Structures are given as C-alpha cells and as structure tokens.
Image 1: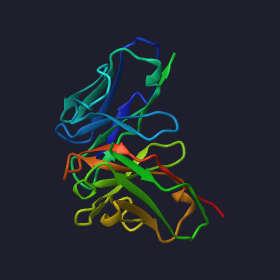
Image 2: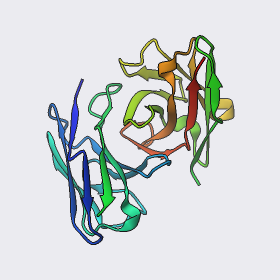
Image 3: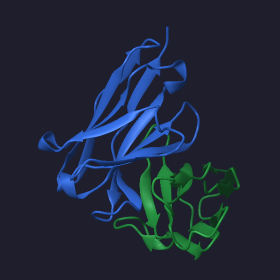
Length: 108
Length: 121
C-alpha cells in the first residue's frame, strides 16, 4: 500500500503567519492528492482536491501544490478559525486509499 | 443542499452485531460512490471502503476486508456499515462521505456528522 507521511505532526503559529505542511507519498501518485480540515469534534471538510484545486467556498488563503511524491499545503495568513488538524489523502488505487497521519495546527 | 445524515450513537457489548446508516439527500444517490472512514479515539482517519449504490459495487481497504460489511438500499438513499461480532477495538467514530466527482471516487465531500460506536462489556 502507498504510505503517506506528513510534517510537521504539529505546529504553533501566530495569527497572520504563513503556515506550510508537507505530505510525502511512498510512490508516485501523480496529482491524486487531497487535503482535508478537521476541527475538534467535527467531521472532516474537503479543502483542496487534485493537489491544487480549491474546493468551492473555501477561502483563498488555502492552497496546495505538488505532484509525484511531494506535496505542499499552505495557509497564507493564519486565522483563529483555522485551528484544526489537516490531513492529506491519496487516491491512486481504489480501494487502497490512504490518509496521512495529520498535522495539528494551533495558535501561538 | 447535498447532505449525509448518519444514525445516532451506539453502545454495544463485545460479540454483538450492529448496523449503522448514512442517508443521502439533495443529489442523485445512485450516481455517486459513498465511502466509510474510521477515526479511533484521539487518532487519525482510516479509509475503510466504498460502495456505488447504483449497482452495489463494493470495494474494501485490505485492512477492513472481512471485518465489516458495506451495503446500500437505493430505494431509500441509504448506505450501511455493519459488524457481525463487535470487538472493543471497534470503538471509534465512523464517518460516511460522498465520493466525487460523479461516478468516480477521487475525493470526499460532503461528510456525514459521524456515528460514535462504543463497544464495552
């Protein structure tokens, strides 16, 4: 199965800071990579699909990039409401989809 | 509005059976795959499997093959996740989610609110 790693596992940043999370796949997955946000006690929410496409209604401060094995998720200006855990998810081979372990984002 | 509404929290004993549900509305239920995801307490997301209600084509993650059964009743726009014999290690929050784009299964949106399953003697 394709293994997904994320770094860092957690981070603390100030409001307005630029935040970057990386996700690495154990093999080439083209652009078959999505990003989700999960706030405490809530269901996950899709933010980015196909590595770089912003889901409708998601603020433009969120962005994604990458292809192959290395991907990046960025919050250009961290807001208090962005406190959450962020997960990447690959869909290279149904049914062997996998999520990354998550990155917890806090406000400093 | 596209919506998935899951059944309520369950408390069960080891060895008991259980079937939880996920009802879709606001879209063509038979045209989109529906997936199930487990989240154990304090842990990350684990992809379990997926069903296409249009023809009941079902695929399982190898980690969950044989451990659960996914089904759907298209007449009432509802997908199910069931266990024949629960274990304490099945204690978790379970989410359903619609897979997109239509007739494919690439990303998941929206998600149900989750069903908490607690298995304890």
